[in-house]
Image (tube, rainbow, N blue to C red; front, side):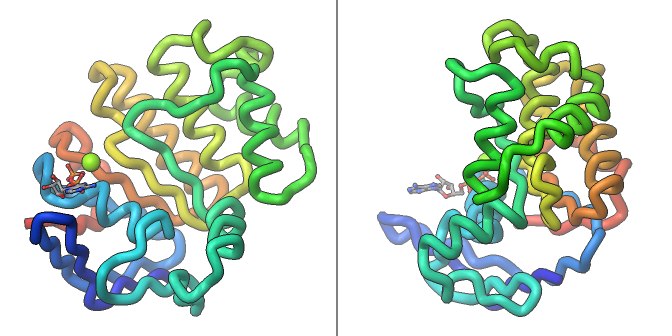
Length: 209
Ligand code: ADP
Ligand code: MG
């Protein structure tokens, strides 16, 4: 379970964003809705340990994450949280397979090529294992981003506007894969979007003013 309590963040220039409290239960699938500039990315960064809020607390399974040392927090994130950004962030000089192996290594886990194959197969891109990122389409790259996010079977999968750079067909496919992958791995899923195409697939929504 994750709880966010009394969170607010002050950006330079006196810009403050206050967030309402949020409780996310294991296995929930949430949509985080809000217009551009409403604070979605800020909230996801606070939720995932990337940005320490100016006030308030984030507790994940009993651990107040900003009480951890930065090294402990990095490892906690690598093992427990998978993040999918708006645009794929992959290492261009590494093959798709090696990008996934790197994600295992960042989390302090041994190389597990069977797991790499399993994830790529379930996402329908096993044939791209030896390819490099610049040889893939946007839709395929977003699948690789999902693969990297779920490779270590994290409890929490976070996606920040994962469909905004995709056409309708790829957007639908990416959403279905996110829902399917989080179910397979029994992960909690939070997807931020301003994309109204996405809304119907979800029962839990957290809306930013
Ligand atoms: P969203 O993801 O919903 O578009 P963001 O969380 O990126 O919203 O931004 C929320 C608000 O905080 C915006 O007004 C934005 O300009 C401001 N903001 C975001 N990052 C910074 C920053 N590094 N410095 C100053 N202001 C920022
Ligand atoms: Mg954003």
